[in-house]
Length: 131
Image (cartoon, rainbow, N blue to C red; front, side, top):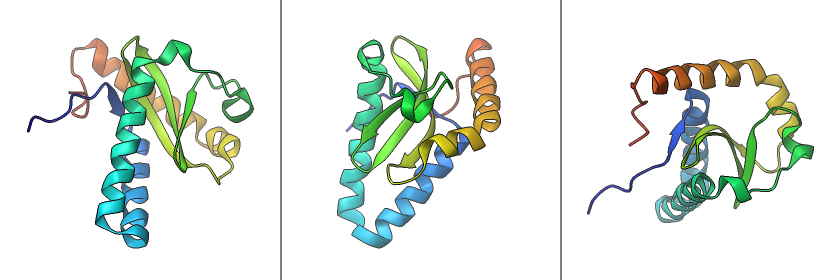
């Protein structure tokens, strides 16, 4: 079976968020439920990438960061569009957390990671997760 083509890139922060969520999920729900949950997260990311223009803004959560937010089960995927068919996932945050405070506290780190990824894209050196 061929690997699914992704239309998203994960920042280093997002990679860490996904790893932590996976560890937590495995310890709480086990392998099968975790696999389904992460399949849903992947499908959500793909949906965002394909349907960015139709996404409604949730400014009460993201403020004026310019980032998008999309809910998948118990998490929010925080993202920035790359083009009309791809996104950069900045973070994965549980919905029960204080999303605006997390975004404010990590604003500079998110911007730095986004800038680095955009430079790689411009230079034709796509990050390994964009395939």
